[in-house]
Image (tube, rainbow, N blue to C red; front, side, top):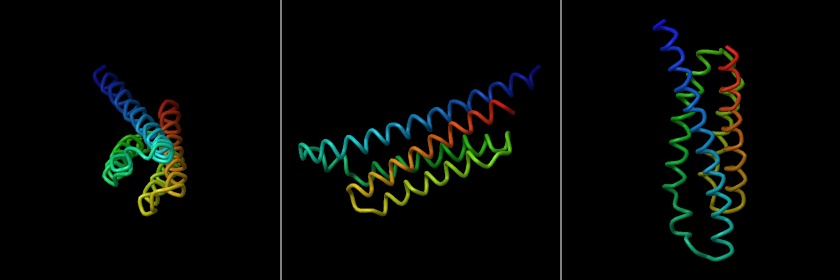
Amino acid sequence: MLSRVMNNLAISIRRRLDRAGIMIAGLCAIHCIATIVVVSALGLGSHFLLSPEIHRIGLALALIIAAVAIGWGALKHRRAAPFVTAMTGLTFMGGALAMPHGFGEAVLTLIGVALVSAGHLLNMRHAGAS
């Protein structure tokens, strides 16, 4: 009985981490698009919206959450697809940090967050099946 309760708790925590990862990826995408629109159209907020610290912190959060949630899921369901998909996305996001601000950075970031979200969704699907 206790092991079933602990297993259900672990599943709940892992799913919450996957959902948090998807939420952070979505917020990152919104930030990226909003930055392009606001800075391009109005020329406002570039000192804050284009701050490298925001991007570094976002990537660090994405790395931590993906490592815990997807790593934990991989131990449970033993499938590589969520891990490979999310790590590819994190690689794109990291590559975006090396780019100058602009269209190329936004494209790499959006590809990255889409892949990270897909990795979390795959992780949730596979963890539910195991």
